[in-house]
Amino acid sequence: MKYVWPLTIVVVLTAAALTRDRWWPALNSWVQATVASNRQAPASDQHGHTDTAAHDDHAGHDHAGHDESSSLELSDQALRNLGLTGDGLGQISLTTFSKSITVPALVVERPGRTRIEVATPMNGVITNIHASSGEAVEPNQLLFEIRLTHEDLVRSQTEFVTTLGELDIENREIERLQEVATSGGVARKTLLEREYARDKLQSLLIVQQEALRLHGLSDHQVQQIVETRRLLRELKLYSPSADGTYPEELKLSSNYLPTGLRTGNNAHSISEPPLILRDVQVHRGQAVTAGQPLGTLVNYSELYIEGMAFEQDIAQLAAASDNGWKVTALFDEANGAANEVPNLEIAYLDTDVDVDSRTMKLFVGLPNEVTHEKRPSEGVRFVSWRYRPGQRLQLRIPVEQWEQQIVLPIEAVAREGAEYFVFQQNGTHFDRLPVHVKYRDQFSAVIANDGQLFPGDVVAMRNAHQMQMALKNKAGGGVDPHAGHNH
Image 1 (spheres, rainbow, N blue to C red):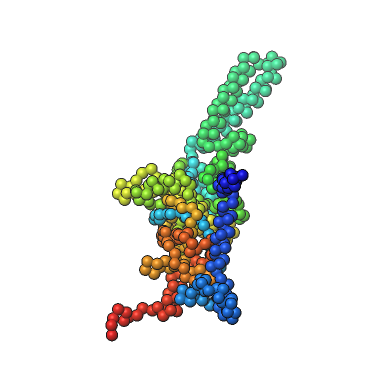
Image 2 (image 1 turned 90 degrees about the vertical axis):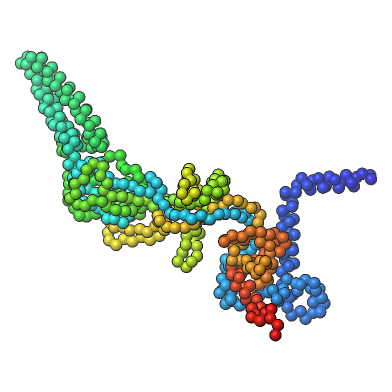
């Protein structure tokens, strides 16, 4: 029996060690919550005790976390002035801190994606322009009308229609000769010669159809010429889809109705982002040649941020890209604050380092959105995008991550000499607590988890420096101009 208790203790300790991941987090949270609640004594226990016995029970608690020399009581107006309402107060929690570097950057277009050139595929004369520079257009919206003067296309259509007419004549002649040959009025040889001539025309017609397809006509348009026997002489150019793809066939017609009215389906909203006609490079009556640009469309729904990092940061940037760490864009605003755009992904790193500046470019995807829309007249639409090429900003790129850290905004920490302080809410007061700052940058401070702060504690998230100055003024801590002088 003398070995039973030692053996039992060994078994219990072994089981506890094996199941530590199950019971230790809950026990640790309970201990920290208990310690935090004991540190925050209720206001009724801190002031105005009339019961002597009760007062003696709290002796040694620092009366305890509420030393008047390091505690600040603020009015409702002061709380609002310092922004200590709503998100101005926050609970301490353990989170993952990303140590980061900041690099200058510029919003740029996506090469091959943002800009779409509209060019004429054939020679012609501009007869109508249906959109102006700066106007937002939607996919499949009519932009230009062109009267064709393309000699090859006109000649190919003319020869095709001529061959169709000759083939009709041969077919009618063969039908007549078949009736006469049956009665013996015409030699069989004459009928065969006509049939050979018809076969040649049919072969020629196939070649001419292929020539028209090479000019850009579709099977439907070729069939339209066959049925109407009229040349297609008007070309209508429509806007492409947002990804730059055009319809499979050219919009050609044989009937031209001159009009100054705008047409298209831009009077209703669609799911695809609008394109902006950045510039119009032609005017009505201008003769244009095949391949000549008529205008430029831009799609700003997806842009790039081009960052400029130093050569020594290449390894850290590669690690951030490989780990999929998110990047934050910082845009300067008129009030001096920075508008943060978080959770952006690094698209790719440049393959070269600039010889002169010794910097390397990195590119980050930037989703865009329309912020303003204006319709001054029927069928005319102008839009404004939130981000535009040419805007300057900064990129905050994580290069190292620390888990289970107490992270506060830099405005939540006040500094005086070698000391750092935070202000913990304690009833109607804010108690100043000295803390150890493990790391700080221009945005955040990492506080050591050494027992000064616990998860669940409520602290001021901003204006800690102003609170420190108010505490010094309260204690008469203004600068003494005679300090250090003997009188």
